[in-house]
Image 1 (spheres, each protein chain N blue to C red):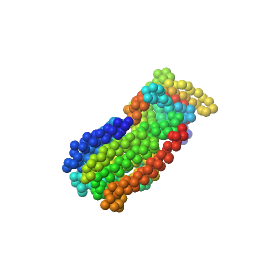
Image 2: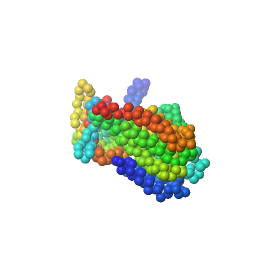
Image 3: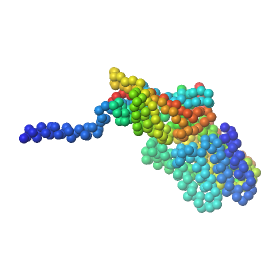
Image 4: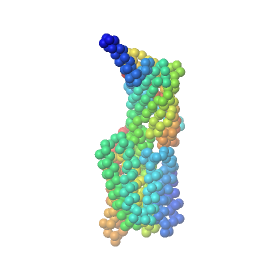
Amino acid sequence: MRHLGLGLSLVVFPLCLFPVTLASSPRVGAATYQVDAAHSSVVFRVKHMGVSNFYGRFNDISGKLVIDEENAADSSVDIEIKIDSIDTNSADRDKHLKSPDFFNARQFPVATFESEKVEQKGDVYEVTGTLQLHGVEKTVTITMTKVGEAEGQMGHRIGFEGTLDFKRLDYGINYSPDALGNDIHLILSIEAVRK
Amino acid sequence: MLWRGAILPALVTALLLLPLLRRRWFAVVSPIALGLGYLAGHVAIIGWPQRWPPVEGRDLMPYVVLVGALIGVVTGLAGPAKWPLRVIGAAVLPWLLLRSYVRYTWSAGESAMHLLGLTVVLTAVWTLLDRVAASQRGAVVPLGLALTATATAIAVGVSGTALFAQLAGALAAGLGVLVLVAWHDRQSSSRPIVPLAALALATIWITGHFYAELDAWAAVLLVVAPCLLGLHRRFDARRPRRAVLLTLLCLLVPLAGAVGLAVRQHLPAALGR
């Protein structure tokens, strides 16, 4: 009888833990990745004086991807970009872009994207979520294409590239409309390492 | 840029003021004229603020100017209201401008120190300017304020924010019209425009230092400069033109210092490219 009780407890106790274990980690098939800033790029394009396209970048990006290739609805993307890391190859222009005239980096130090819905079609993911920029939040959809996935010395890595088009006036960045266009083309190239 | 930032605000201010020259309501209408002239320039430069409630200094400026004009009208009609309105205005403005610092950057002690300090300084500057404007009619006060706004425009412009330089320029243009009006009518009082000028300049100084790159000592000199208009009473009243000239020279010293500091800090980097 004692052995039966011990045997039952050995079976029942792990079963009691099972729901707790499920709740505290992603379900089987979902993997969590940390964005590798050194191998990720955030590049923006804006028209200058109506005659040329100008490109700049943000160098400091961080975030987390949860990828479930069996059920994309369980996937998520959380990205944070530090506005202070803007880089246009000119210290004075970077200073002006960080000033209250444009991004106002001291008041709005980060831009963020938090996904609410992910839909998958093959290697393409339609990621819908909230983009917060310059203190304004809007729902946007970024089309992310899986570039590759590999296991190596630097861990298990995955890469995506996506683009987003938006209007800077929608985010309250409206200074100098004669010199800079309203349409911004954003390219996100993310490499992330599995945790 | 000159049309939007200077000519338009000056024109609007002049069109509203000139018909009322030497009339009974001139002193009460002058802050409204200055406020509407500034707003015309603001809208031409950057448009009306898109967000409500306003969160940035640039979005707050039109409302600050409107409130300043209203306070000028109210205190011109009902003198005893000026102290409560002055203290409330001086306390609320720094808090509105620096909420992000209070929320994300400063500790509770640092927040209290900064907000209290700025409230005290703004109240003191406002009070000093009000006393000078009460005792001195004519062009001295609007000229002193116009020179301060012009120096502010240059200092913040080289300190990273061309937008606030333009907004300060729009304010200076309206004040320039008031200088011409006061030169013509030497009995006109500048007292009603003091609240608007104090609040608008404070918004630009605080934004310039905390959100752009305006040097702290340059900001201090800009704050001190208009307070020196009170030195006018120390000069010989029997020689009024000499007294005005000496007062303005005293004002120009800290203004030149502020511009010099800002230029020294920021311009060499641009010249070196």
